[in-house]
Image (cartoon, rainbow, N blue to C red; front, side, top):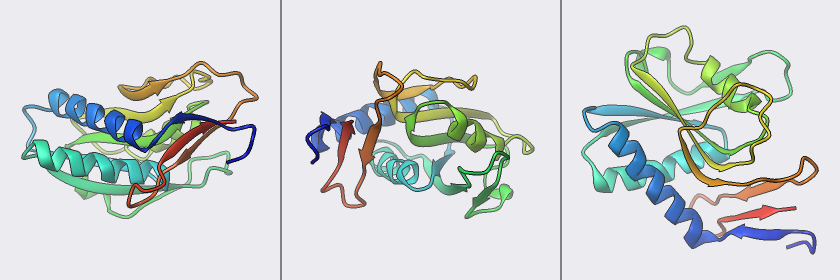
Length: 169
């Protein structure tokens, strides 16, 4: 860890946040039989996988996993998904990412679903930095932080959960 990094969340705290978000998602969807967890590649998708694991333990929801791969450097929406739209049509969609900063990534992620009918769309982020320049609201947040623009939030999410950390640098 570099000297200029401050540990914000450790492995246990990240799992606690994910557990709490899973219960909130379940409560928001008590009358649903299935939902779509749409994770923005790659850390958002890893968080979505963790949510699925918790939701599978606490509910009977059928969970469809969807990976969204965005071209973040493009000024226009360029996105690929690992499933076609028939898998999320007329369903509840939970869009998952690691950090909300400007809101651009979530806005582009939402754009994937705008031409397909759905029941509702909710957003999940592990950390909300509150520096939005896009009109994006988060429905479920692990940690809300006030940071200065020059600071950076680094989320390390390991598939097995061994190295999970959130740093502020």
